[in-house]
Structure formats: C-alpha cells, structure tokens
Image (cartoon, rainbow, N blue to C red; front, side, top):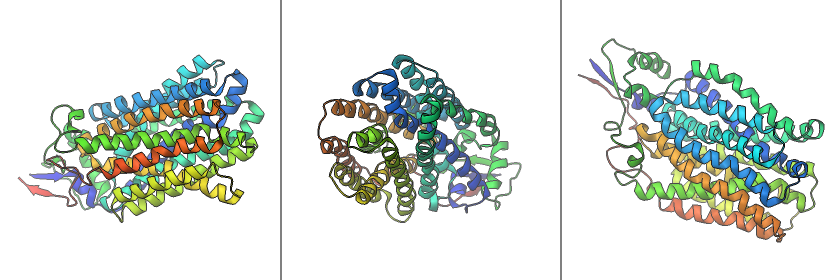
Amino acid sequence: MRQINVQGLCDDARFRKFHLLLLLWCALIIIFDGYDLAVVGIALPSIMRDMGIQATSAGFMVSSALLGMMLGAVFLGTIADKIGRVPAIVICLLLFSVFTAAAGLTSNPLTFGIARFLAGLGIGGVMPNVVAQMSEYSPRKIRSTMVTLMFSGYSVGGMLAALIGKAMIEHYGWQSVFLAASLPALLAPFIWKYMPESLAFLVRTGRSDRLKDILPRVDPAYVPQQADTFSLAENGTATGSPIKQLFADGRGLSTVMLWVAFFMCLFMVYALSSWLTKLMSSAGHSLGSALTFVLVLNFGAMIGAIGGGWLADRFNIKYVLIVMYALAAVSISLLGVKVPPGVLFFLVGLAGASTIGTQIVTYAFAGQYYPTAVRSTGIGWASGVGRSGAILAPIVIGFLVSKALPLQQNFIAIAIPGVIAMLAVCLIESRPTGPLRIATPVAEVEPA
C-alpha cells in the first residue's frame, strides 16, 4: 500500500496539456466575469441619462452588485470547501450570467439594483474558487504566473466591454450590453463535466477513483495502483471551523492585514472602474475618448497582472506587492494633473497595472498563503471583506463628483488607499506558521 501526497505531486509536476486546459477554462470564466463587472461602468453615463438619476444615486446602483459580490465571495467561497469547487463555480456562473442579463430588462434604479445584487453573488463567488483551483493544480515554480495569467482574463473582459460597448449602446441602447452577458450560461454543463474537482475535496470525501483518474494527467510518472491511498501535503487536514483556521497557528495578524490590503485595493479598482469614464468626460474628453481610457486601463491591468506574476515567481511576492501598491498611489495621484495626452494614457495604463493588476497578484498571494484544506475559505473571506471597499468606492467617489471638486482631489481620494495597502502588506508574514503549512515542494510516495 502506498500513501500518495497529492498536493506534493502537483507541486512538482511539469506544465502539461492538463494545466493548459484548466488555465483556459478558468481564464474563460474570468473573461465573462470581467465583462459583467465592467459593463456597468461603460454604460453608466447612458443609464444615468435614461433613468434621470444623479451621481450619488448612481453610486448606490453600482454598489448593489458589489454588496452581492461581498456576500458571494464569503459564502460561495466557503461553501466550496464543503460541496466541491466545481458545483460552486457552476452556480456562480449561472448567477452572474442570468442576472446581469436581467438587469438589461429593468427600467428603474430599484429593480436594476436588485438584479445587479443577485449577479454580484456570482461575480464575487467565482473569483476565490477559480483562484483556489489554479493554485491547487499549478506547478509550484510557476504558480503565481499561472494564477495571474488566468486572472488577466478579467482585463480582457473589461476591454471587450469597452470595445463593443460604445457601438452597441449607440445602436441598440445600454440594455444590449447587459443582455449579451447571458451567453456564458451555455458553458455551465461543459464546466460541470470537464473541469477537475478540488484535490482537497476529493481527498476529504474519499473519492480515490477520481484521484486515480486525474493525477496521471497531472503527472504521467504516477501510475495508479489498486491499494493507493491519498493525503494532502499539510500535516493533516483542517479540523473544526475553516474560518477559525484562518486565525490559527500565527495567521491572525496576517489574515487581518490581508483583508486590509484587499479592502484598499478593491476600493481603488472599483473607484476607477465605475467613475473613470465619467471623470474623463467631465474633464472635457468625449465619450469615445473616455472609453479609450477604459481600454488603456484594462490593457495596463493585463500587463501588470502577467508581469507581476512573473516577478512574484522569481522574487518574494510580498515585496513585489509593496512596490506595486506604491506605484498605484503615485500613478492615480497624477491622473488629475494636466499633462500631454501621451503621458496621460501612460499614467492610466500604469494605474491599471498597479490597481487591477495588483489585485490579481494579491489573489495569487492569498492562494499561496493559506493551506489547501481552507484555501477557498481564506481567499473567499479576504475577497469578501475586501468587497466592502468596492461597495464604498462608487458611493464615496459619487459623492465627491456631486460636489464638483477639482479633478485632482477626486483622484487623490482614490490614491490614498494605495498607501494604506502598501503598509498592510509590509505587516504580513511571508509564510504562514503552524502545522497547516503551504504544500511542500516534494511529492511523497510512502509505503505503508
């Protein structure tokens, strides 16, 4: 009889077709997730005009989805460690596809907000699950790169919304960009059938046959035997409440600081996503030009995510994050300064790289920080607590916009959280302590 260390086997595996297919599935989900999230910011000026609402009310409408995202990240992230990650991902996909489309059928702020709240449950819930999925199966040496490559789909979705948004809104109205979001629901049965289940879930529920089917695809050197048993790389699995494990064994301060970093980064991300088009329009740029800034923001985010992941696999990810948060504070502060157009586009791209891109690297950091048995829970709670920053951002910036403050003051308000996030990351331990550690780099095969 052999005991197979499944997480260790995945850690030492080489990149193969299995990893590529999983990356493509997860990235595709994040592309649709990014589209659903960005589409409100693209359509916001048209929605405000059509429904006759002011900036502060619009901020509350945007935040309804973000409240749903907070609850979805916490509950659908945590529940995945109990019902399985694939069912949780499918539930999230159906939620954000169906209810984003439903928002396009509404005609007043209240029903729009309700539809966006329900969509937000899925948008927020899918993120911790796909991050945990990629972190679990990716080879250890390229884990950060894999997670950030996958999450670059978020920026692709944002760019897709900006590219098609202007033409669709002009020809078919703002409702059309929401109705288009129903298409990803068609993928649900294929994800259910073809996406591999969480290793931790399969080990915990004793599904040895599924593990014997999946692991040879991860590493062909493993040849299943009838008497094989399976375990995770940690010294046992989490006992008791998964939430309590986030604070156990010296992880308490780091967990809280990780929550602070998520809060501050998501405040910056959603402040820019929701109000960049409107702020640039108020500064004298046309709608088409303002939407170009959204494209540049998301293109910069993709570069920042991939570049940040590459750096995180070669240097300490904590210090990479500190530098990226510092760049966020500087670049956003300068957006309100009158500069030549070329410089302004560069600053917008840098802001995207150091906010959306940094958030993606922060997800990768959380995915590596928490042990496999509570990884979805850890990422879900960090994301969920962080969503309160995303909820506040459109409201706070909407209030500032309604006060007709100078443009630079609005951007400084968005930049300050970057400094706070940088300080929070400085206080996070580079590695968790205690018996539930991140998977060891060597796959163990032990005779009984």
